[in-house]
Length: 468
Image (tube, rainbow, N blue to C red):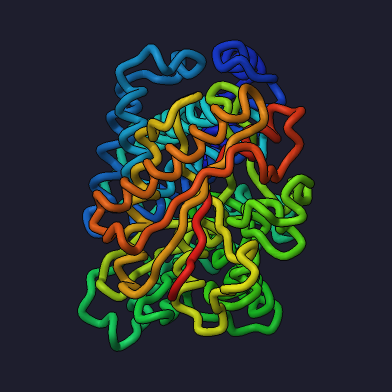
């Protein structure tokens, strides 16, 4: 058996197994291969982060033994028929937390498959990873500590699998990664000193009375020779990128949340996108479409749900002034709203009401109705917590539809949806006097209504700060 854990897991997925999985999830074999190439190191990285915490080695060995004893290898193509499928979903949800759906989205996006297939393949990868770890532990009669020590030697392989374009060979990195030197958590801002925070190491950035937390890995002592020192610098960069790709893989943050560059986003209406989400029905640009979605509007259309699934970007931990924390994407609605409210550089434009709209990226309704789906509750809860941190802030919610069906009906549905979202915030403790809502129907579209993806993008709820 191979001792490279990434290759050992990939070895389980022969061409025959890939073919059977492809039929089971109704996706191309190439799409399945690309999804597994992404999912395998993401599962390994998630397990590594969990294993480094208190009780981690014991948990890792127990999970590995359980998966291996369940004899999951022959059942990988139809894992959903086994009792382990639900257990695997619970495990991955526990590891990823609020980032679970985003993790699935990223796998689906990079492999061009449906979100439902992305979830299935993530769980298939988790089953294979744990089974391989369990098999290795059983064949070598490893204790908790021994399995953990061996697993740590695999960090370079995991990093190279997450970032295959890096030119460093795994052997170049292993020399510096096999020995772990404990490092204390990076100091938090004074205001955060007594608040409970995430267990991972990382950087706290104060903003608006709260802070953002970006994870970063442990580091070991630098090498002595110039050549090995150069390799060590690459190792630090690589591992930092791995942790910045925590749960999602690629896409590092290029700006610090809270800066003007970080705040700019294609899902926020700007003067150039005045028709995207305006609150002024008399606007002269109201009848012309806004700029069509481009590669910067990252996401994927899920045909099963007939919905557009946004890629919310690099995960961060947003800690509010009241001490509550949210694991969200750097480009998420939560972070952009918080950034606007907390940064004095961003002011409400009381003249041009086409500015400042932010689309919700995880709020959905039942088709043709104003009934929120269950998955929408988390983001609305997060938004309510953000608004609680800024008690003087007032916001307006806008509802929008595509142009299919009757125009009057669309207008009514959009109004009801905006009201429903506003009432959801009221139930979370936001005073009704702080909220406004309005439906605009299909009038202010942001994408081509002749395509399924475009219509999904046009069906949306947006939020705009009217008073800070």
